[in-house]
View 1 (cartoon, rainbow, N blue to C red):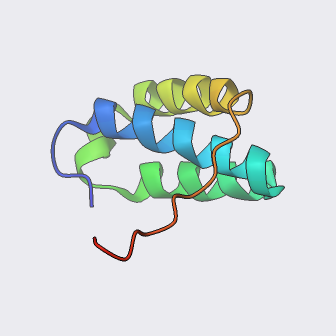
View 2: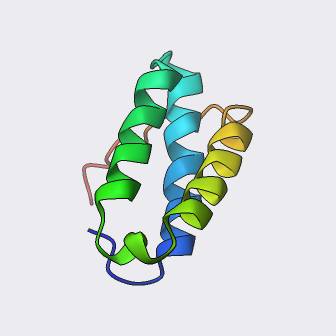
Length: 77
């Protein structure tokens, strides 16, 4: 669903995705393959696929050092 501000969304999404992998033991290869596929198939990101993939890979690798749990939804939200 990326239609603008692709770089910021890629950085945030990849960092979070790999943090989820680290916390929950999700296969990082499968997650990376999904991310790469989505970047390659996105119309907006097609204008700079290689750059987006480089940023994505960098942040994905960094996020592995920061395990991230999903927040539980508060009953008042």
